Length: 288
Image 1 (cartoon, helix red, strand yellow):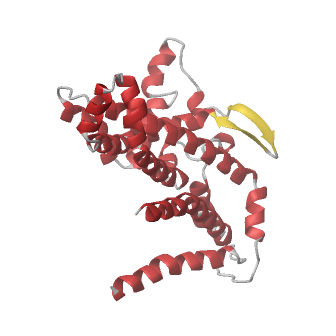
Image 2: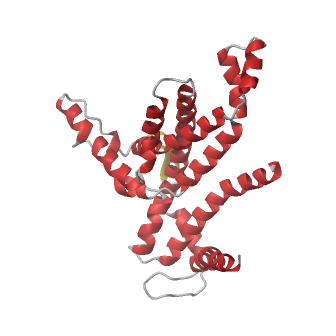
Image 3: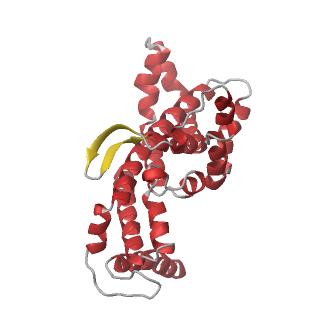
């Protein structure tokens, strides 16, 4: 095991430590500057309008994305579990988007939703072309500091594309969970007089809670680090309505050569992912 431990120590924990060190430095050009800056980079980020918009976008993207993926995956799994004809066809159809990369998904949905191409081009001919894909409007916005804290209309386009791609994963997990519930348990509930709705509500759905928790954790991990889909589909958007921390980190680090600020964003992303992952791992360990 020693070679693996050494490689993980260097390329995972070593680089995380190095990123944390750079985030506390004054390195803002191609020439390294390791002068200690303390938490100045972090404080400047939270005062930055773009980063504030990134946090807002990430919060609402995560909520909408996880909710839609969990609900649609569970619904489709229940429908497919009814022993319908051509089950394998439907299952493969829903799983197919997972075979694509987020870059391909972003390019395809950009074409579909763009007001000047795809579906919207047909709608424009009859005077119904929606502009929400490039809108800077914020729904239910509440002014907080420099930003409006609400749901950016344009982020909904990103949610649609991401849900389309990842619902198959949720479906596969829920379907495996449904197939793992003993048939005797269902029959016992039916004999006791439970209707089909009560059977699902009182017996089957409670059995799927561990699956739901796994789906939430995995989707949260994806949503917090989302980069390629947004980079290919919209970029940061006007007024940063579709910007996210990972995209800002990329531009800060590799375009502006502000390595210290880029490292600070990376550490914030790491902490935000750890907030979801660590409790989940501890809970699983206690259950085991």
